[in-house]
Length: 318
Image (tube, rainbow, N blue to C red; front, side, top):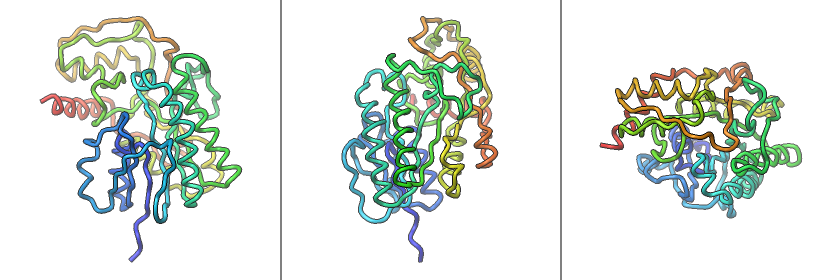
C-alpha cells in the first residue's frame, strides 16, 4: 500500500491555513499543521483532530522546524495578515515573512519537497496599473505603516526565488487577493468581516473616505481550489512566475457595504471615516495566467459567498 503524500502547512490554524489543511486531508494527504496561535485558533482545526492523518504542532516558524520522516510539500501560510494584526505586531510580521520563510524553505530543501509561498496582492502596493498582472512590479511605500506586511511578503518572494535559482527547490508563489468566508475572525479588521459583524450588531458600517476604493472578493473555497491546482501542477519554467489568485470582479467598498446590508436585512447606517495611510485605491487581479496554465477561475458569486459567510457569523453570535 502506498503511503499518503505528506504536507507541512505553516499557519495551519489560521483562516486560510485551516481550510487548506482540510482540503489536503480530503485529497488523501497526511498533514502536519504548524502554528504558534498568535493569530490562528485551535477551534479552526478542532474538527480535524480525530483524523489519524492530521497532526498539530504548536510552533513558531521563526524557529528551526524539525520534522521526522519524508515531506512532499511545504506550504508557508504563517503570517499576521489583517491590518489590525500586522499594524499591531509589526516585528512579528516582518519575522514571519523573512526568518519564517527562510526556515520553511530550508525544510523544503532538506526534504527535497515542493514549496508553496502564500504571498499577497499587497506586494503591488497602491497600484498605478489596473487590473494588476504578475508582471507589474508595484507601487509600494517601503517605510509606511503598511510596509511591515508589504515588504515582508516582497522579501519572502525574493528569498523563494533565490532558493529556486540557487538550490533548485521546486517553488510556487501565489499572490492572494481579498478572500473571505467562514473562520474569519470577527475583529480582524478585514472589510467583509467588519461589515457583517457591524450589520448583525446593528452598528454603523464604517467605510473609509468615500468608499470608492475598489476591491475584488474571492470566496475561500475558490481560493483553496486554485492553491491546490498550483501545488499539484507539474514542475516547469511556468511555475517560477507568481500566480495571482482572486476574483476579477471589481467592486467598490461602498457597493459591498450595500450588499451586506441587503443580505443581512440590517437597518444600519453607513458611516465615513478618514482614509488610512497608504490605503490602496485599486485592487483587482489579472488571473489570465491561472486560467490558462492551471485551468482555474473562481465560481462562487459574491451574493452566494456573502450568504454563507453571514450564516457563519450568525451561528458564532448565537
